[in-house]
Length: 279
Length: 289
Image 1: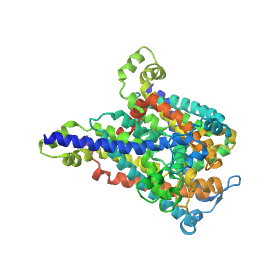
Image 2: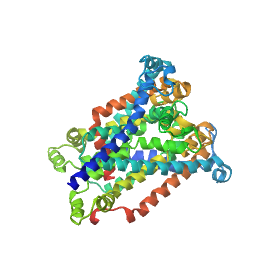
Image 3: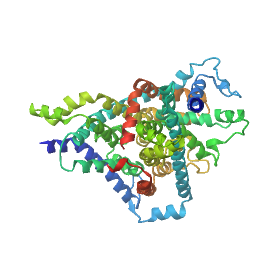
Image 4: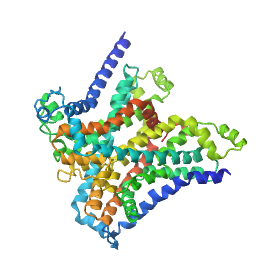
């Protein structure tokens, strides 16, 4: 009896804490949505009102046309596309060499490359900028795209290597007997059965590129080349105090990520777990 | 044959490592000894940048202090809250996946967008947070607009986006073998014994990972000062990377900015080594594999 009682008390405390915490995590979203749908007078009423009256859908077209968010969206999609391409081609190459091929120095190189996870980006920022500047490529998308074609980042190589290591090498060997090259083994055998890991890498790459602010503000000068993140940050400066527009624009910028999350939740969680635990 | 293919396949990654990591890191160190305005040629000036940083630049000192404050505060606060939520979720409860999704979602929102939302939540006159404080009968706060409250406010915001850490902790908790808990129960241990002698030691590798990666990340916070506070009030949020950015791209002082970056790098290195160095004393690894 006492044990059952203790269990009930424990569960009650758990639910109470979880619900209170969840309110703290959800309230900002509710505040965001209600503000995005209100007109500027209702938004400033104190104590705050929660139901927009009237629901002002026109905040969205007004906010999104006051600066060319459509253009920014397109720019961001272009950058994301080429970054994804670079990552999804070169990261599996390295991950395959680090897991399925035998060569001298393999594990040593892997550890050396792993140290890059700990290198603060702040220390590479200025020389990299000066390099692109000297090549005359500032204010183009090259500085934002090209680095991803060099192995796609150690995080991704690590994640894919973990996955590839679970695939038996016997599969490769059978193909080698039939005269296949490692290149063919990678793209025809390993890649097709690694879809979950590749989707995870793709999602993380999408998120990081979509959310990046520092890269685009350093490299892009012309307003017509801005990404969504830069566009939103300049919009915040221009429309300060116009919270109904700022919230509408913020909501639109985060929407693709939220949709992606609900579609691919499993991959988000698996990816984080995989890198976090075996790190 | 495998060796030749392997070299071809890893070549982009290894080239990239030298081209985008090692090379720039060395270059940053060299540039920090120059006076370099973009467009003109660099002048070698020895340790002048460092002398100026340490003896004439009060903003730099403030910047380092507040960067520490924020980095350590947010790693501790987000770590503890993530751990508590993970513990709560690691039970047989209903709506587990709903709770997990709710707690996780804020961590993937673009920081630009969530910073904008939080500016509005923090608004001292019309923001939600002061209204809620008022409901509890508490006085309102200046939040990010007050000198004393700016960093605690940003730490609160980092707690809101601790979801990824929570997921890692949750996976770690799920990986703890049941038998260990059962063994404690057989010895008559209660929940505290289970927590202190099984959960904590088994979780130390995961905590270790969070501390290392969390510190590296939060030492380099940029979006919050850039968008929300512009380093203010009174330089209270002049985080290191934002100060580097201002010097490099606003004042065009590439050499000076590189010197700050070098110091930040050394600080992060020392901290990482410190955590690694002490890890053998508190991180538990399974039976000497």
